[in-house]
Length: 209
Image 1: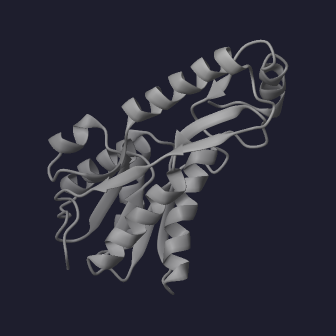
Image 2: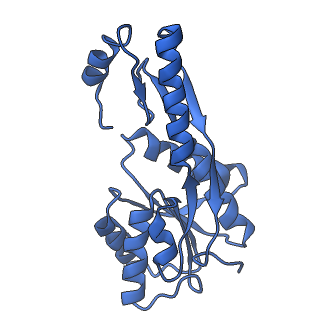
């Protein structure tokens, strides 16, 4: 949710009366949160690209004002830094197919190939891959790409998209359990952030080089 501090203050004023829970991380709030481990997802993406042999890396990032996009990017960059690697290319997108198109045009204009790329959501990767096909770049022969969310369409692209998988069933179970406990035991004044694990699903958009 695109909530500012004013919005959060309104929600917080009700938290002692009714259970309130965020399913996305929010900066500077005392609302209980259950969210995916976005940082770990970015970390796993970088680790996989490194392990399959890439020495150059890039990222299609999101709006850093959205905490989840910022966490995904940080996980990716932190893995690279901790292994004496660096990110050679970044394009800031907006989670849309169109920004994925523009990301590839930017990469293509700089004549960058043989690079491992992480897109912080699948839709930008879909746009990126479509433009790659139109301009004659082969994936994964010329570059590899990993998305985030593991949306169903990942299995319908050519090549199929490797992606960080988010388990929405597990997220829903944890959310309902938290709300149920709030009704039974009362609201807890202490803020709790519960992270739901993520995992990498490898497909044919990445390969060993």
